[in-house]
Length: 167
Image 1 (cartoon, rainbow, N blue to C red):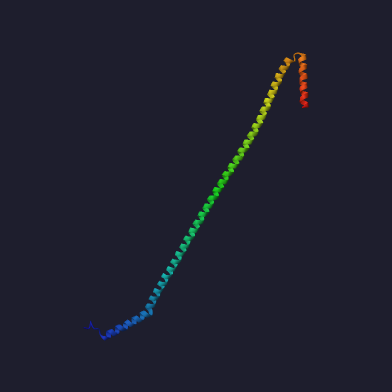
Image 2: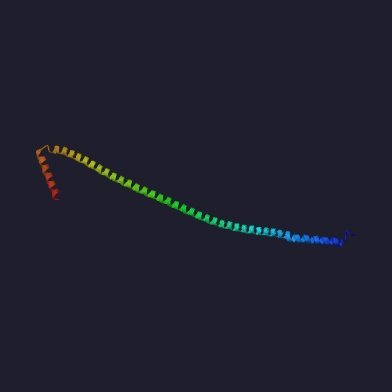
């Protein structure tokens, strides 16, 4: 029965060894273990804090990115509006230049037409005058074949000239 009921000496030595072992563990083992657990806990807390800071930075960066995207879209819109305004101004300027050039060409053409018309009228008048003189010469040759008819014509012309000068 010694296996079932231990001796008093065995219990004493087992208790003494257990107490020494407990003392050694409490003195040297538990502080190292608790220090290691505490350091691990602090490391986990620090990692969680850093992760929260990183998450906050990421959310602020996302907000900044949204703001930058809105600004770039506004800038793009402004640049497109300026380009459209510049394009419209260039088209209006080109149309204005074309109109003024067309008006200038039209005015030059009108002047040239007027000059050519005047030149043609002078030419026609000259031709009419030449033809009139030619016709008058032929008529006068025929009518002035006699001296009396010639004198009568000269007197008639002088009379007409005097009436024109007096009026």
